[in-house]
Image 1 (cartoon, rainbow, N blue to C red):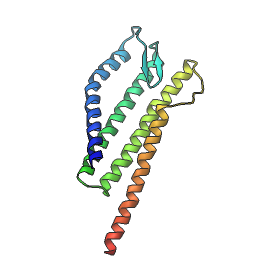
Image 2 (cartoon, rainbow, N blue to C red; image 1 turned 45 degrees about the vertical axis):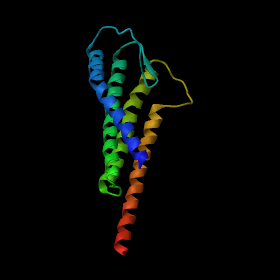
Image 3 (tube, rainbow, N blue to C red; image 1 turned 90 degrees about the vertical axis):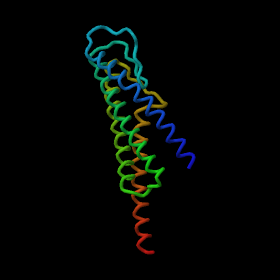
Image 4 (cartoon, rainbow, N blue to C red; image 1 turned 180 degrees about the vertical axis):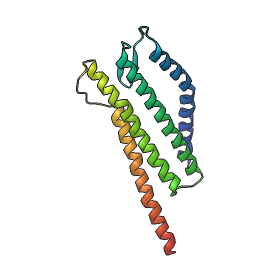
Length: 167
């Protein structure tokens, strides 16, 4: 049980730090999207460096911010899920719903960021094959993991109900 409390503390810390950054991020991205002035500071988000703030770069920044907000909502649902685990609510429809929702949010976040970033790299002439880590693949994999976990919990709930009926 200590591991659950440690995980909850880490998730709460990350959640609080993310909440602090949201207003600054929204103001900064809003300024960049509305401004027509050149921005000389390079911006690097998830392996994509934006040096020239053109229309394509603004689209990528918008979708990167949207992806970040979707991830934060997923993190909020993880907080709720961990709280339910602390209350020893395990094989319940709410747990299955939250696992499924978190998985779908992570998959959506991966696509919301990955597809515009891919097209931005193509528009910049950066077509290359890289072997290594990629946030797009991490998010898709993590989302699929949570959806599989939802199915496992659904099967566990059915087995629990069948076991309770036979007793």
